[in-house]
Picture 1: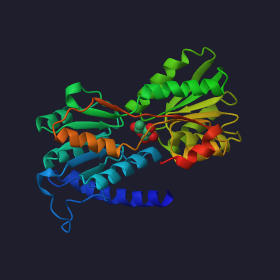
Picture 2: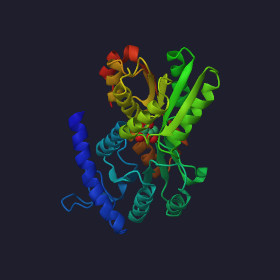
Picture 3: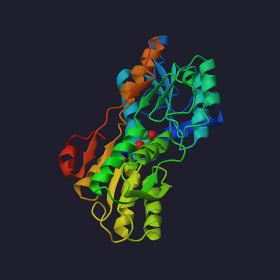
Picture 4: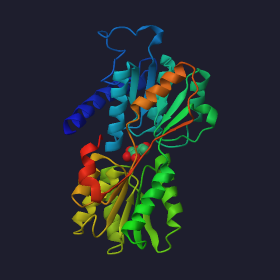
Length: 339
Ligand code: GYE
């Protein structure tokens, strides 16, 4: 996994360099998956006629282990399924994702996939894609646009994830205690709905309350920083951490240890995603529960793209099936984790 991460980082740096060049010059191709075929490379054979599926994917960035796993899944599936993939890393900026989409439109790809960093602000560029006859597939996060502006959303039920996280927290705290919440990126559907789901479920537990809630931007570093501030502002008062993703929980665990407390024991930790690192933390007794969110969406994504190209009907929502994993079984579960 460590080696894979290294290769991925190198790959993404190369892609970003190509991508930045593309952003400056609209007519050039956007960044291309280093694993996949590269249309800019002269040594590559030309596209195999019109039959080959050409897909542009505007990724968010590299904020979490979850997102690295998703990028891997997309690059690998493109390779395996013989898709001509144009991959762009938005480096957490919506404007970069919009530029990438415009570049994909100009190149006349068959389908555009995008993981919208935030929910709003997509109408104009999605309309441009629609006018060019290119369907948009939303991958892993939703966009707040009318139904006719996207073909399909592939991803999780974030409200349900939030509800499940709250039920697990209630079990760990015997229905009573103070919780701090580490939110994902402000304005991202994954953050908004995970917050909503948890808050809704929390109404069933009158003795449990959220005493502080702030964004940690889905990153480990920010999660740690915000948790440090929470611990200072509420000494001895925090019973549980609800983190919208595992990376922020891992940052919070570091902050709790630095404060001389035992994460997983003194302060219970519930997060979302199910990445390997949180299973390791559970095995070490430092985290309690992860609510799974599946990042391995590559094969489903390209299947939907293929169907769209062939003019087939696709479902409006391809929902991921996900489990809940607890500390008690983590040592066994970790053996079969794929990301
Ligand atoms: O949970 C988080 C990531 O959009 C579902 O984004 C995704 C979220 C995921 O960075 O770790």
